[in-house]
Length: 371
Image 1: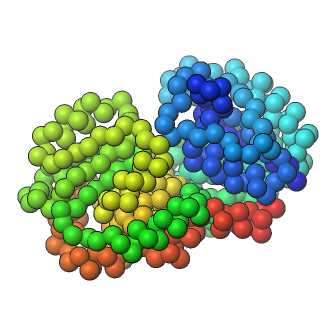
Image 2: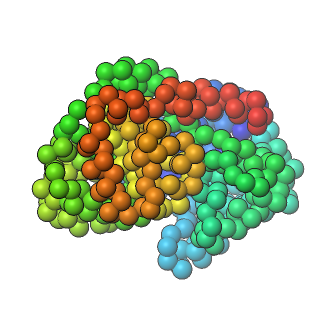
Image 3: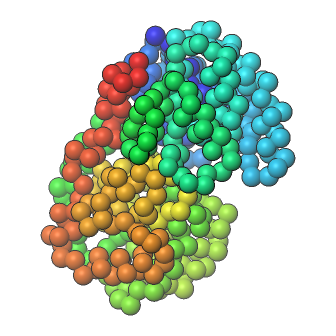
């Protein structure tokens, strides 16, 4: 069986002439290639230096097909999507003739026109993966259009979380992110990690207000007893990083800005950290980074966005911010510092939850529920 994947995943050519791309997506595709004879991936290619989070394809049965990079926040960027649409549509239908099934990954700029086109002009078997916030009340217009179409077509749609009035074709699906190697390493870390102050906190993602970075810095600045905090690690980059560094220096707490890291280095920080921070107000589905940190024994401190609260239960296996404010985050941090070590140890997530985010479980679901 042959598979076509259509996405907006950014690809690059490294110094050795090897095509690389966004690590989480390429890892997922590398695993999908183990259950398909051939995999074709139509996605974007940029002529720039690959970030450290990039990874190569690992199987010769995966074929990358480049389309122009389109999209952005400016109005002219939206016209760029329309301008390049004929080229993308042509490549999609040319490749569809070679495969048995397709997967389109949404929401994305090209999904605005590809979803209805595939609905009305293709009888090829396939499914859609919607990785955004399925329950978002006021999504961006492009996201709303894609979700509207997906609710009204018959192919299966994998979504994050379980929701009232969920259409029959929409299947609750966990986002895979944990390999066998990292799961085995995580089991050892879960046993050995001790929750004694001073604590190590960490964040991984885009450094921006929407992801909660400013809330994190301002909340730690308000703590009365800062001796319970050893370090706060911020992994990632963003336009406001210099401003965040200035704010962090005023907190009297050791903030460590790492920039982009490869996955092994990210996981090294997860292994030594006690808590993972994501007070996000962004349109999240269920961020993979939460499950990755859970695997290495981090207790999550997260906002109640989309399906996050369906997996992280406040006071049981983490802390859920509601309301998602600086003062509430500060109060939770101070509450944490009053817990006894064994009480925090008991909050570590169990393997049953972590296994939902393994690639083995994901492939099982694909084979039994999709194809």
